[in-house]
Image 1 (cartoon, rainbow, N blue to C red):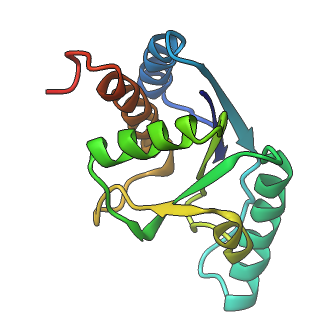
Image 2 (cartoon, rainbow, N blue to C red):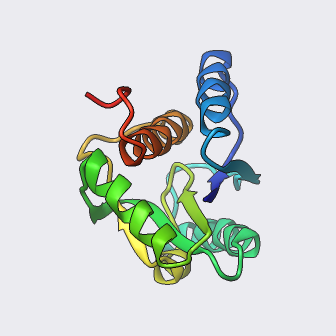
Length: 159
């Protein structure tokens, strides 16, 4: 299974980069992981509703341009479904058995995701009712992808 994470913005903190690199190495046993960063729009708050729409629209266009045409698209969104690690693993396994070889996960910027991106996604997931920085969310997502692979493989990582 090939996994692409499309994320708005860059990781600046070294500790997050190191964590992402560690889980990325572990994932190589199961498939290919590609992290694609798209430019984050700069803005000054407060934003009018029109300015918010423009910022999200620009970021959304960049995200949509990076999606693989035949991939299964999963957007991380605070209003999405809340699944367990086991449910994510089961869904990834079902996709693979059904012939899907590519999953694209999307992490928006600090303002969220454009409605066009959410419409393109076949699944929206929320990892918590808490709000996390989008850079930290990337590390959490990579760890959960690794965890899903180990669950499917019946390995001891997931307890």
